[in-house]
Length: 391
Image (cartoon, rainbow, N blue to C red; front, side, top):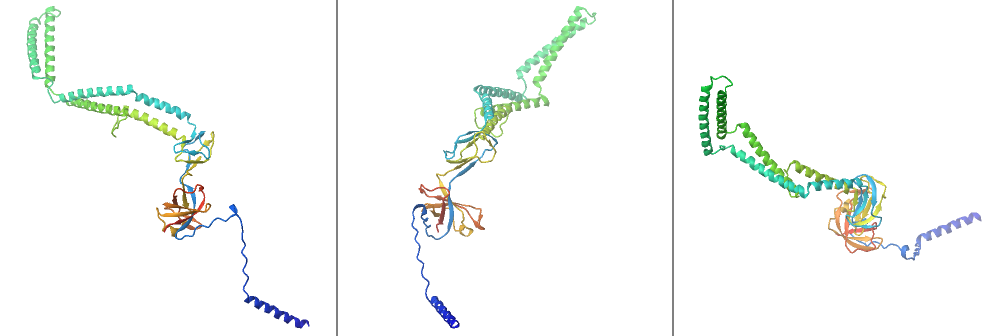
């Protein structure tokens, strides 16, 4: 019996197998999940065509601020979350010594530019003008006689009379020259003859000078004095212009001018160094982070304050491929789907990075999009988006 039953069971099994191959599989019943709020699935992004990319909402401006010099933090004027305006002082380094230097430099410059200093400079210019006029007259005299014809005629008459007096004195001395030395008559005659000779010599020398011309050395000295007087007047005028804060030519020079410019440069340098001890907000925004507190030491170039302009938001793409970037242009309109809000915001391409980066082995280009206002109040930096570029 057992040997007969086994084939029957095999035939029944084969028959059931054949029937199952001809009957379609039952359709599974879908499972419905009910829920609301956070348990609800996010709405799907709208269907679209053309170039698409993912991205994030970012602040329109960010600033990471660092000191250009090392120093100890003296004052912290802001806290995280505080709104600031461009130009607000955020942090300060210890700068007491620089404050003293600034006071000294300002006082030194005030002394150089005081009303008394300006008056002295005007007097110096007047004196230089008079010196130049005198020097010019001396130069002009090189080309003319030193006296008029009338003066020369009168001088010649004096010379003739002096020669006559000398001749008479010589004759008188001859008459007593044989007398012994010490005789008063001889001594008197000798004295009169000597004085007459000196008078003739003096008149002849004066006549020769009035009718003659200077030698080359004297002429060179006279011209050099004139050039020096010109330079002195010019320098005094430049200095006076500088004291009055008027425009100077590039060739302006002079020791007083150099001293004034040095004092002004020293003051400007101290102010620049003092300014470097203060961190100023370069943009309007909100303080995101303050890395140091008063008393801590700041290193040059190491950011200590971070600011974000969260009132102005934009979008930056993260995966726009090299194949798609060629179809994107600055000024192109876009639609931005904000996943967290389930809303679409329009915008415009304002920048396409000229340099590529890589993402998972793919070459991508970051694109910046300015969002049209008003955009949703609940929009926040960091939210992920899908971007569709207009065709």
